[in-house]
Length: 111
Image (cartoon, rainbow, N blue to C red):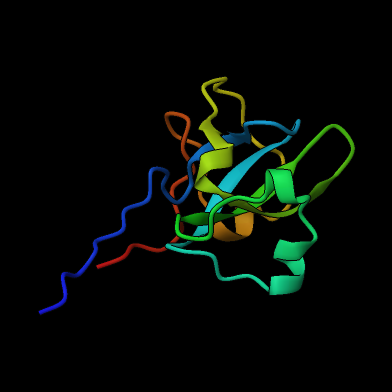
């Protein structure tokens, strides 16, 4: 009988995170428990920087000093943002309520 692997995510929906190498931060709005983007996207990452595919990948409402955008980031490249500063992405209010204790609560509740 095959052993089933249970995958867990280190970060959660509504959590503010920052990229380990690049100057941006964001709010997690979705999680893929393994890589689920296109091969073209994956191949566009320089080989020496490519993350493993067998880890959670996070969809972020991201921001840097110049822009707001969506980002898709591997777990190995994220750190919890401990600054306590809110994220100003214009789409946050569509998905989340007001920030509480450094986390944005989703408008919906999972049962």
